Length: 334
Image (cartoon, rainbow, N blue to C red):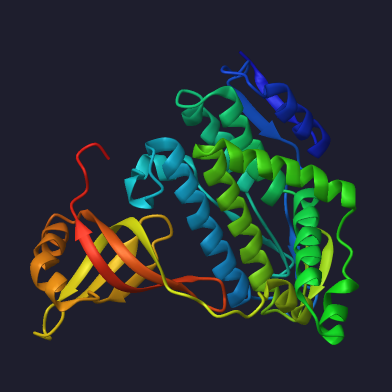
């Protein structure tokens, strides 16, 4: 067996084509060249400390990576399933230079290390799309530029006001062909499900976190693309629409149960995928009275339960949990 060395995005795309339909890998390690590094340069005002917006961005990226690694290692996106040894093996680092004006991380190195665990649990095709896919989308300037250009085109279709269109029209990050090639990779990852789909989700969240940080910073140069605060804000915006409540079923961790109010229990739930916590109540007092014991049991065992939740999408695109419709134990086969 040998090491697959990925020199640039062209070779990465070729390797993805070659592996399609394959069950086995013909190598036992993967390495990426220095071209797979998405650097951030802050030209205004940061020469001694990292801005809070980018601290938050890298923190969130680390969590996104850990959720993907937990899925690859243990079959669950719950970060808490990762052992200390597993987390140490996938150590995430951010390099700070030029005071604090030049930032970069080691995403591709973390991804390369994940191959050892992934190889024994997935097909060769799934492994490479999960690892090279993230490296292409969120680990190099080529993918960042194409992703940014794609987001620009989406916003131009949504924006009606000419003044707001001007804020993004002047941004030219990549060519149409580049966008199409990246879109093909992303569509393939989504259609595969499992780890590749989780990898796509992580990669898009990582890019979105960069864009959020840029929207809170006067000027940023990310992956060789200069973007100011107003342009980033406009690229992040979503068209306003009335948000209708909907119901979802999801396994959640019970963090706290407050029964101080005899009329209703206040329950703190933690999302297994992104660790977001929500303080909610039952939508019906009768359900509260008959099913709250299941919640107490999940809390006692520091475990989880399956919740039927009423949720609503907020203006920023985040999903907010509004109430608990019902709860049941986790089935034995999950």
